[in-house]
Length: 96
Picture 1 (cartoon, rainbow, N blue to C red):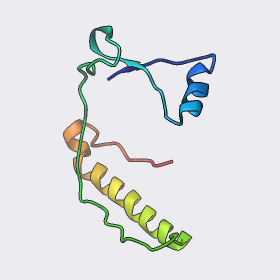
Picture 2: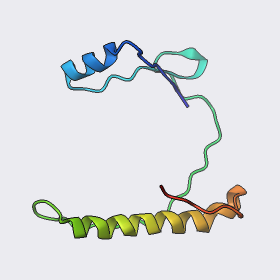
Picture 3: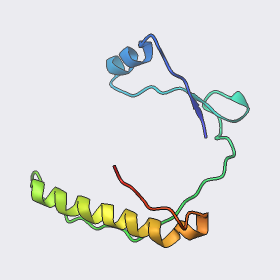
Picture 4: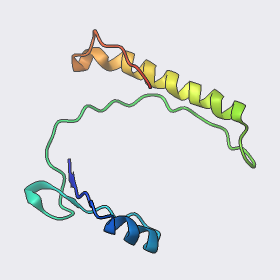
């Protein structure tokens, strides 16, 4: 969608640290700085939300693992539901 500028000298990294904000210059369509995105086809699917309860204080590792597992299962289910529509019927989702 955009071409991100890579800074081999680390100037942007130091400036970002000093300003406490991430500076990522990019170029869009027509080579415009901060321009509109290039037109490329995107595959987008939406599924059911994974609802997580509000926790007072820090969540336990058990709670984190429980909802992480739910999220990974939701990703797999979403992929399996829509993969044929995008020509990936024979593919299997591998989460690393």
